[in-house]
Length: 86
Image 1 (spheres, rainbow, N blue to C red):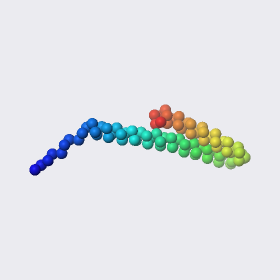
Image 2 (cartoon, rainbow, N blue to C red):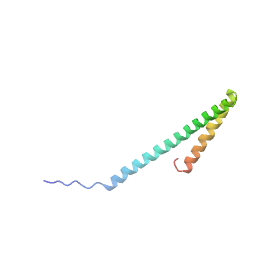
Image 3 (cartoon, rainbow, N blue to C red):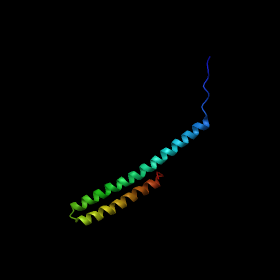
Image 4 (cartoon, helix red, strand yellow):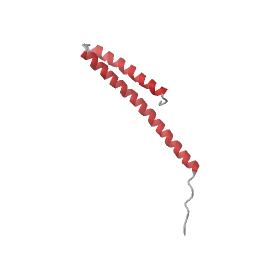
């Protein structure tokens, strides 16, 4: 004999979708922070390379790289915050 399948529980489906959305939002926040730090690393590397190319000493190049890392990372995190990613 034919046994109809019961209709899906809409409340359970909403709860499951809510958990999935929260999981994806956490992942987006983690990726946004990761992208900000990687952008800072690239900025620091570029600053270090340019300063060494232009004749700065090792210590000066390191200071430029550190400052550029902090500035670039904070700028990226500021933009991500304004976009609502963090």
